[in-house]
Length: 414
Image 1: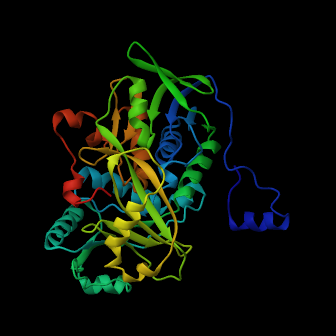
Image 2 (image 1 turned 90 degrees about the horizontal axis):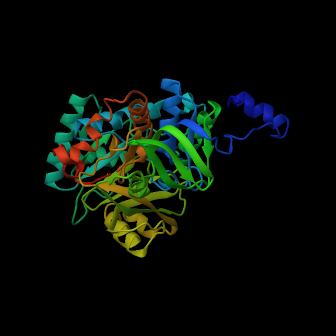
Image 3 (image 1 turned 45 degrees about the horizontal axis):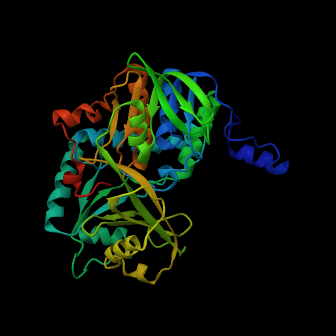
């Protein structure tokens, strides 16, 4: 794999960019691998990368039924933060945020990480108490956040309206080192690094069955033939239930659509990420000038990846009082992604009832921010059988009553 650098760009410019090679290989599958990862999104590719980097396991196939990064990894609003209340959540999200800091250098691929800061607005007295509690918990967890007043919010976000008639801005929880990254670039960077280690990324290859023998996984059946393996990782976002059924077990989750939209591009006017949980909307400005806007999940189970009018109406109506300027913008495009939602709104990273089979799912609406930490912990779990990052997120917690209830703690599942 060629090293990307300013010198490489200059060299290729002199020879009319004829020397660039493909970022990753597209091989036909082999008959057998040590590990198969189903799902070539951010979490699946990160798991494969850290299996190779941290544990030397490089006979790995990452299988994707569509195209690389074409699922939720390419359909999110790119927010990165770690200011969660519960200790297990804060640990894995802070691990991810820390890895994001140096990920461009680690992968030799510009993921466009922008630590612009994230504000979670408090617009009720209840939220003030909740976010101050979270700030204290974050201090104990080693996560750097702070409570700020409305004057500081206005300083950071000049376009905000502090005096909304229904929900005035009373302050906010500020994480200075939160921010955004280019979602596609995260997947592409991991894929390039995996391919350079000799791993096979197999696209347009749908898994049709999971084969087992004596209670242990032995391989998968795909549209490109049968492939054997010693260990299997299922990392397929909104279709986790279907893959788990193929493997012979059930998961305590449901699939719903999460929608987002972007406006027409405008001049820079907002250089932080703002989340308003009382009205349930969040917004940032992309490098191209678009206002990236998202809200809550659909209120019914579905597998659509299209947008819908009710989402535009509900989300924009929620935000327009706090950001009056967006009422004059035109929508550029809209989309949806299929997310797994668990009962406690926290993920599952776990062994399964099928020996040698591992599951990574249930991230709900907050999966992108966790990609490096999720991959790190999942790789450790698959390689060694245990990971401090994933221990609290096992399947057993649902029958043992060890819920990690971030929906109650944060008032929102993002």
